[in-house]
Image 1 (tube, rainbow, N blue to C red):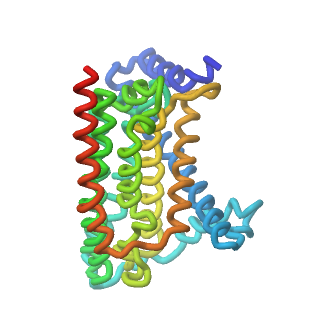
Image 2 (tube, helix red, strand yellow; image 1 turned 135 degrees about the horizontal axis):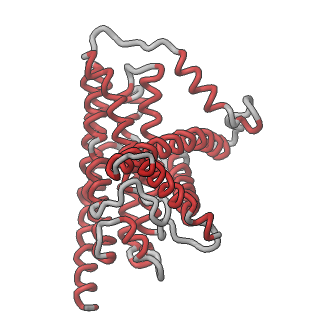
Length: 344
């Protein structure tokens, strides 16, 4: 078990030592290792997205009393791959009235931002691409950049439905970013660090979900809204805005937005596991297996909420953040600070 636990760390060390033995400088070897790490994460994320899309379609089918994908492969497991091939071969239509540069750039920016979230996530003990001391701050800051890509898509499309969908996304993300940050701050106050590995190690005795139940509930609601998942998927309200900011997109450009959304979903689920459920800590199994297991359980809850709850009206959505979540998270921060002060 010890060998399995340290397998990837030992492999990374062996790669660095091998490159240095070949005459490469220590800095060059570390840069090569970073590139390899990022490429591996990108590959793992891609495989996970294929699984997640199939899983969500199966779950939605079960909830709606239908079969879901069941034609390609056993239980329809190859349906997502077939869909990807279809999108790759579809015509890439760019409407004449669009701002060509912004229109083409937006999906690329969105998927790059989504992948950048994984840089600071510790997938196991000593298994972060970059173990930043400000990891939580980095995650929040980079995650908020996604609004720029969505606004680019809406503006570049030169379509009123696209622009309205993008504006809804920006308004929603800005509104729910505040309670999300306040909820995470309560955890950071207890852990005494913004480093994600330190936060995981601080949960050796008890998970923070038990110490901060209010912060977890408010965080989970805000994270659902940040991801544009149901019941907070107003920016993509098909009955009102067709496909929201993605209305004018087709083929692989549309698929990139779709991939970025699932990439964000896995990243936020992993962050939830890290901040509230002990991250990569767990018995019996290697640490690098525990984070994906916990993240998948959390994603199942996201799927369940999306396919069971009705969509919330836009004005109610905004009022809920400003009138309920923000005051509750502020009060929780004050109470947490007072308790920590008196415990000292």
